[in-house]
Image 1 (tube, one colour):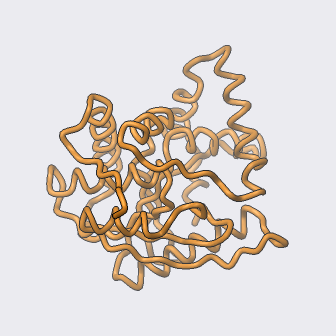
Image 2 (image 1 turned 120 degrees about the vertical axis):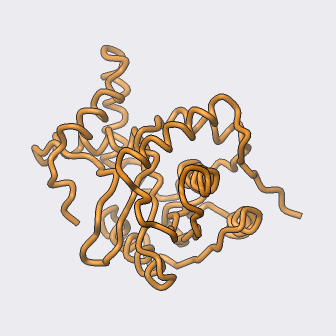
Length: 247
């Protein structure tokens, strides 16, 4: 019988902190306003599993009871390619969440981040719409947002990061990012405490991506400015260009 991690309250002190921060983001950006059904983009990594468990934890507790679905895009090089689908299915079954899967068509000879990301999003959006769901939660955390701000600034001369909530007009769905205030290091510790399986990225392109290089730059900046990630993330949310809202 497969052993699966089940993260649920009562939490440790870190779990309480994460849930409190999670709730603040949901309230600040009205992410669940008029929402009764929601899909989680579930790669199976620490971020998406933390997102799934926290959504399950707050459902019916200060928020309406949510009908939560999980959508997993599998494929040789997709995010979560190293995840055993039976593992994800067992987790979802244990907490009463329906799992829907789609398959990525990306091949090594034509592999690059932009087309892979576009296809993955399209598959997620189409799967959600087929379930009658128009709100999809992504596991992007504070550090992802910080990296995006720097990438846009350095590459495109734009001061813009990941918006906490954005409507994708082309597909008629809304993306929310409830982990936007939470630091990756806290998610990593939470995942270790809860016994999440460690998933390694199999994508040969992702190992040397621009995002990885920007993260290394942030590590160097932090030697001089220890609060750089937090401050860049805050500035991005307060002053960031609305160009980030373009679907």
